Length: 226
Image 1 (cartoon, rainbow, N blue to C red):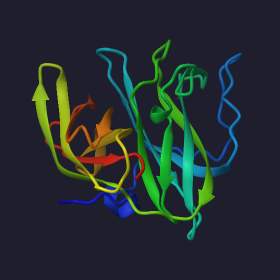
Image 2: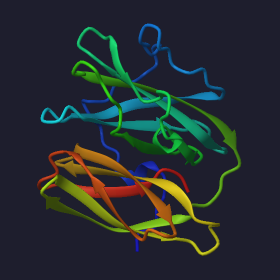
Image 3: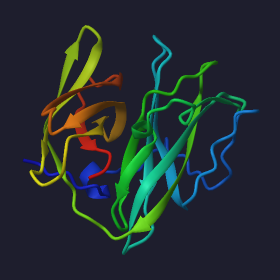
Image 4: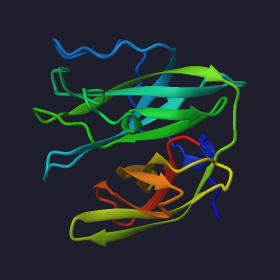
């Protein structure tokens, strides 16, 4: 059994030419500005931008870093923007009606980094890149409640799927929805990614439909939060 640990080591972070630090102000679409959020800014970088030219969908993989070595970052809001070649925003993750699970990480451990996948942003014109920002509040750390094991890949008529087994701790509380995320690496690069909402402890096996070409890759699957 592989117990989920939300840290850099658990996700095997590697240097990537696709990283785009967001120290500069994040652009907003005219008349559709990003929501004002309370909390401390956290460092983010886009580590993979995976457009699907066939159906127009896009998966974006963002790294979020907690700079505090003693406190955990909680209720982290991630705002992801899709931009065209001119830098104009053509899609945004935090539009009205978005499921909060799709834009928030409940927990980032002290001094740790986590990956966050968004594969549900609708865009008008075809985007050419993505940018992201994140804010969260700090609090005392806590232990993880869900284990993820037996991550594996299979190919279906609908494309590549990552499958994993979830195991909730008996004392983790009543059934709840969680965001299950997956990336696939090949030769050290993220080549596919996807998400799926599951109910724990009701769902013990989850299938995650991937954007990208996962052939010959190795999957990593985790929960967005404890």
